[in-house]
Length: 612
Image 1 (tube, rainbow, N blue to C red):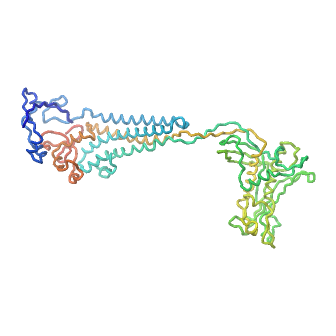
Image 2 (tube, one colour):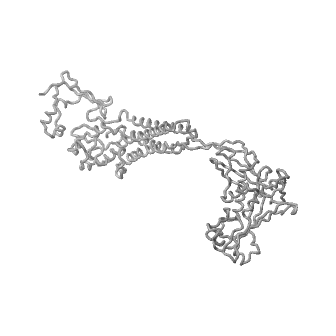
């Protein structure tokens, strides 16, 4: 049963911002309008009601001529109205600026917060909260810059639709660029280069959130405090250290005792400096100097008694030419030296009869400049020797008192125990295949033998481990430094004490570079977006209402027939080429002018800020 109703028409603002007042709205007695129910519509038009609905002529009382049209306050004829600028076309520009400003402010706050924590103890602020705050700041920065790019992208995307006709499948890809990276391709870049580029920006900017939180880390920092400390110095011949063998109730020194012999055996066998207790803590360093023994070795000629026959059976020969002072020999020899002759076999050449090498090692009173660095209680030594005068004119009595010549006597003590290991011979007579070395050279790191040292021939056992011209002086230096562990004499020097603590370390490059790149991309998008908005004068968006007002075209209804629920299987539809422009008069079945998607033949290109 048909019902009667009174319909009041109100002006509805649209994209073209026009209002109208239908003539019948001004009548005192408006004509009744028939309300058609959906059932009646289906009954009248069958299953194809939608097509008949769009083709059905409008009731005569709805087609009365307009009394007037108003367009922004200006009266124009019905066939002269035009689409002009949106009233608020600049709003997207404001939003782009707002998002960029938020990104800049949060990024700067992130930077200054991290910088304030640089080299601060890890305990001043919870590392968990620092991580959470940094991650949150990185998220806000990348989100703000990305939103700015997306705001520009939606305007540029609709601007691209005006430029040329594109397949529906390509339009789908362009709409999906920000949600599906598989939509990027040559066709998108060729047909919509600006939109494709900005969509790529939207994917690149979030990468800035990966590096920026890692710009602040926790790392150990060594803090040094300088102070004075008491350190041991060289005094091996001091009269209150029991390194000498002295006859009871006497004053003459007869050489090193068992204590320093044990020390020498350990140092020479290992080839390293004996570790001593740190005088300044487990992590500290200091530098000091003292006088001690030093050797300088150089090549010399082979002894004349090494004949061609006998020389093949000699493997090591070392002779110490130094003697003590005593009443019989007076002041003793004035030159302290060792002459060493040996077969120059390496371990790989053991058993071969290589040529002889002879070196002469002269003893000097040397100045030791020692830098000692303790790390977790383990010392490391850096030593530089300055060779002064040769050691000579020894006076080996305790009654001389500490001082000169005690420094010389100290050098002599270390040299003697050192020479006790090197002096001697290792020879084999032609009449026997076996020999026992008359030297302790193989108990040091200078030379070696095999596991069969007591059973094999000498020729198959002997070899040297290094160049003895440098190895012998270095081993004496290690022995001298090892005596500091037992020295009763100390000196005062400057110490640098190291304290390790966990601190925050900020690397600004890992934060500022990603943020700067994101900001640069956002500014590029802003510039392009402003240019497009000023050129078109219309703000758009990837929203349903924008799709609604731009697809009011009967041709679109025709080509999409049968696919009202989904376009997934609409292969023919995907091949249709559409663009966005002004429908030609009559293209929509009437004289109304409006912009919509359609085929190139249906449309007039939209240029500038108005429909032409």
